[in-house]
Image (cartoon, rainbow, N blue to C red):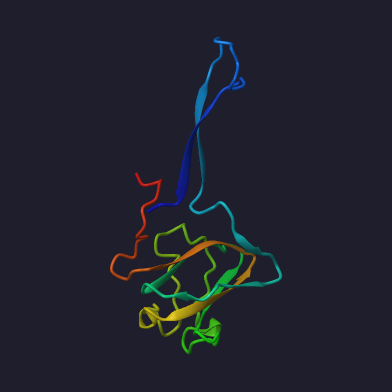
Length: 156
């Protein structure tokens, strides 16, 4: 279960074009949250993020978010921008945790539907509503594996 990205690096206290030969070096490891380069963030006042339309290519929606002190809800819209019955914001089970804390925490569910398999191959949009939360990334994944299907540089 991947929660971090690792970046090994080397450091030298000299310029690259120096003629000195008496220098020392060090190596280090920088880490950050998975996909933590940037986030959509909302404070005490809620904010919305509406994705561009895209073709749904999987069965489940995974979000990488930190909503420990807040909330994230997701609404699925059809090709015309209308909320889909059962996948609307009011039906969404509120996410109020750091979704990387446990492997299953990031899988979005709605009250009467745990997934979006019926939308596979259709054009949809997602509307995220955040309050005191950060959204780092989202992914439509395949029900069979419930894993990210692309290789990552951080695999061990």
